[in-house]
Length: 68
Picture: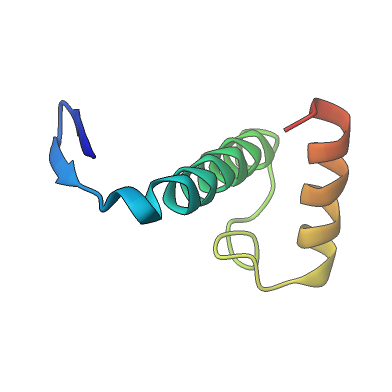
């Protein structure tokens, strides 16, 4: 599979495409959550990367609320 955007092109082996797509979707979701939190005044330390259990819980709650 070939995947391209403005930043470049990647070749992804077909047998890994679904797994990689799921991982990328999850990462995009988490980054949207982080951006929302930071814009709301949250500190980035412990949020990105998520090293605090409380932030993981907030993310899990956010996913439940947003359906993401």
